[in-house]
Image (cartoon, rainbow, N blue to C red; front, side, top):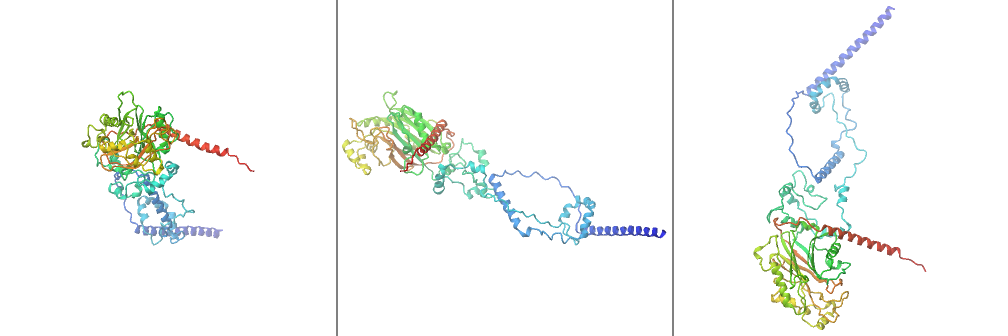
Length: 598
């Protein structure tokens, strides 16, 4: 029994001795490893640094810059995924580590926790030791599926819906991109850099919005731009050269001027497309001015018809009347911000001023830096009353008190006795009542040649051309070549001239003439009459003109974008209703068709 007890004591002694040997071996190995680790890693004292100054405030990134950065991060992440030099090994990054070092690291967490606060940064930057790399580089996680494609245009569904173009504008958009630089005009990259609108760390493309054709506006311009004072060469002026060139690169606008004597008829034409939108020009004009003599009793209905025909792209800037003389000015709704306040004046040429069937109505305003005067008149009627018509003209230019508050763009070239000298461009149109001094048989013989008739033979007997040549009327005015048939006098609803007992000679009573301070500023594009409107004994006469516009100063009273909103809404509703009725009529016509099989 003693032998068995001694054997048991020997076993316990050996097991304790073996544990002491293993513990001492483990401590020696740990100390040697820590000494080697400290030899390569210099422990430095941690000194807290004072807080940094707040960063300099920078401007908020625009939507385009955020999209540009999003694309850049996407490209960088995509390149890094496919770059083998930046990818770690998936199976060999931990093979070279010492098992002893691993065991030491796993059993000495208490020692490492005490030193981690002081040497965390140094340990992370230390090179691998001879015992192994304790900070092995882990492999990147590879995505199982390719990333979703990124929309290169950077747009969002809401923005695409907001900027959706109506189908009516599809053809106009294609044409404007190819032939008209006005619609896509924007500053070049050089101008953006020279004006300081592009920073060094962002591209020029990021400053150009892909959702708008508008030019970027600097914050400094918004702060300093008062629109109340400025000069011709001032940058950022609302009526200045930069704004003018953005809308009209060639500095020419299209103007439609028309006159029509309605003969006081209550019935209005159902469709005015042939009148306001005549065949020939591919594009509508920028401005429409219509003068009426002996107008219909319901002037508002006439204006609604005009708005309905021109559609939602135009607004009525101003409308005035003098008895049965009407004038309506329509403008593209994009351009109403560049118009001054509109002024008007009237003159009665009859002896009894209460009867306002004869006289003149003038409307004036400034567009950018160019002043306009539009006059519609109805002179004395009668074949032989040429002198009375000349008196009507003289009374009009002397008694028409315009402008009132709008400054004269060139007061040194103005005459107090002639209102037409106060404006850059003047259009005078109406029923002047000048006749042809020729027998009706001779006139009908010339007109019987059809469309190929030489109208110059008739114009040799025109009273107005003779008076303008002598200088007694319309001094400084000119008229486009007349290539259409006389506009007076027709049988109502017919294409034949007067068949009543009076047998009046056909004449060019309705005219459109113009003058300009600067030579060749007004170019006549088309001058004709509308033969399709037959509700009066007169045919409407219209002219299409290209007019040069100059930049202006911000010292004029602006109209502030005012227009007849009520008229606009009524006209658009009628336009929509008419289109719906047309589609319903076509649908009913197809539904009522009956096919019979014999």
